Amino acid sequence: MSDLALGRLADLTDSHLPCYLYDLGVLREHAAAVRAALPDGVELYYAAKANPEPQLLAALRDAVDGYEVSSGGELAHVRQAVPDRPLAFGGPGKTPAEIAEALRIGVHRWHVESEHELRQLAARATGPVDVLLRANLAVHSDALDGVALAMGGRPTSFGLDPDRIADCLRLLAEPGFELLRLRGIHAHLASGLDAEDQLTVAEQIVDWSVDLAARHGLPITEVNVGGGMAVDYADPTARFDWTAFGTGLAKLLARHPGLTLRIEPGRALTAYCGWYATEVLDVKQSHGEDFAIVRGGTHHLRTPATRGHSQPFTVLPVTGWPHPWPRPAVGTGRATLSGQLCTPKDVLAQQAPVDRLRAGDRVLFAMAGAYAWNISHHEFLMHPRPDFHFLG
Ligand SMILES: *Cc1c(COP(=O)(O)O)cnc(C)c1O
Image (cartoon, rainbow, N blue to C red; front, side, top):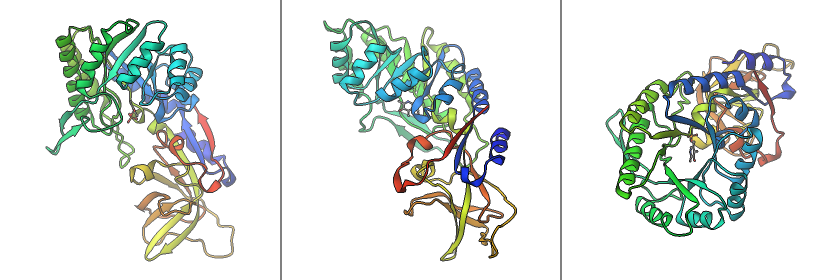
């Protein structure tokens, strides 16, 4: 846990809880280690949707080659937070206004999701546009337990089926499409893969792309193999094996000289630099189980509700109890940590083991730096917003 975050928390009174604490030094250090593990020929983009706080975007600046944005809102926001950095613009259902605006400000790479999008782009472009076609490929990976996982290749709103890609290639050769420069293929097929499975997937995407280029006689020089690097919420000390991943990508590049690979992780970059700090308001026994109700809840930190996990946390004991009556406390050695919302889904941790947990104690939820505040339903129940502290 970050000393800076703990230090700041110690200075805060209960009325300043809950709050988010970010340690930007932790983020910079982690991102630099990720960058260092990747070989030349691999570009690292940050998927802004994981956490678009301007301070985080700026802290990542030196470690990343660019940012992946998936809406007009993200495009404008990231452009302002880190001006002049390369942007890759993806996402299904781009509106005419978003397309016009992205063409106006200029993006480094355009991830095209459909034939209709390609046609709109060609119709509106007034200068060169560098395009990657997003492919919905079926790839297979033998997970460690021997079960073969199939990813992509299923009905989704994302990307183009392989035969549609061939249609797009024909389209790109037609008059009127001269301003669109096909740079390569983009595929973001799964999330939560460990390094071994990520490499298997990357290899299949690259092989498919290189084969496609050869069959059509095209100069495809870039393959973006997406994000989705695993983050293990059950073990806050575990990290995706970036070293093994980088070594594997180097081998893949050695087989394809001249190819540029790009990856665009979100969660695995920013998850570890954020904490959500709060206090226990009450402890109750309900039909044999202990419930600790914290100030705040999943309307601030929706991550555990969306993923169905227990958010890892640390208890910071607070001595002293200002009331003449007994202090409510967990008695069973396990507690469900829930928030203030009037819904049984407002659970941050389910029957988690706790040595001691009492009303008035503080709780520091870890791994709250990605898909946390920005995916939460803040307005539900009209509780106050948390404070934000950007440290380091
Ligand atoms: C969400 C997303 C990412 C990032 O995924 P993580 O699981 O956060 O690494 C990358 N690329 C695309 C196209 C995405 O939609």
